[in-house]
Image (tube, rainbow, N blue to C red; front, side, top):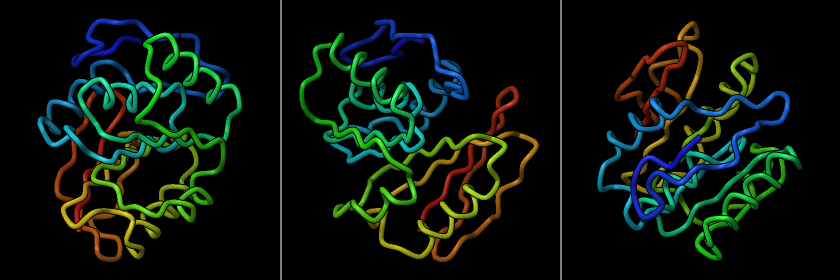
Length: 180
């Protein structure tokens, strides 16, 4: 895993994921951040089901003001801390080692961008996350929710006050983009 662009461009991250963690491919990560463009600068960003933290670290590299990493795996959170330490990142992030649904109760600020990457086989999580984001004020007024999922799973076109505005399929993965 590497950082695609920004102040840490081309730096490598610890690349041995613990069992059960599927990192977002560099190609898909590059596509996400090409779509986001300058909107990442100064953003409050959520890397939910963060795994090794590659998405959130890319957001930091590209100028996000604050990145929340949430993962319930102790090993994953340890890897995120190690990667941030190796880059010399000391502030502008928070790591929550807990279930994402429970973590959503903790946040007191809306996200400009929320990227969620739950395990593909956990269909219950997709529904739960869409219900929460579609009913609670978790996104800023012009906020964006991005959900990575298997290309074999079709996510709903709407959830509460959210509407799917875009989708992208790349390899075995797909992304669904939602806005209020």
